[in-house]
Image (cartoon, rainbow, N blue to C red; front, top):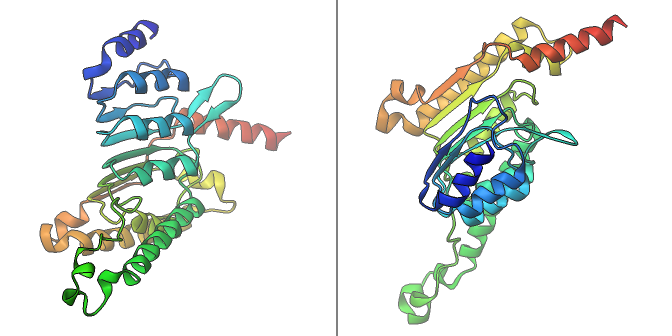
Length: 276
């Protein structure tokens, strides 16, 4: 790993796509390594794999990688404090940059019903503010076409897209992090209004661990409601241009994914506590 990082840092100026995953060594395991790669590889367009990306490193990526279009965010193991991950504010800074088109969010607690709703409300406020600026602008004067000043006045609408609007492809996994339910999916669809593909992966044990008294029947009912809502929304967005079947296929919900080792470990710890 040390030699690989050294080579990337030394020769990475022309590197555009970086996928390092599956070597069972934790990837780039400390934020300092990712920060060094960020500085050494200014032309990165896609950065995949489960690496130590902190809020600070993520913001450096946003300012340093002008061409970034695709990124994966996942928890990582910090040596002294255990599992860490980007916060909601860190994710918000990524959405604010307005350039990422493909986003993988792997088992992150910052993707929860409450956090997604907060970010969606922020977007609504920004949207309302932009309309207010336009309404108060001289350009909105009913006789603007009669006045050269009004005709040449600079536009007052934002030059950057609203946070979330650049994302076209979204993948979310949920295993040990806070699950999403119907309200969270509704807020997600508002936060990402231009999604062309949306994949969600989880299993029953994710929800069973977080919600006391959850039954399989309740879980299956929730799946039906989420599937119906998301497919209807994707059909409304893309049905006219792609056809109803193709538009509905833009959504992929995998609700019975294989139980992970970490889920099994948590379950065994919980059973041990209950037996004591």
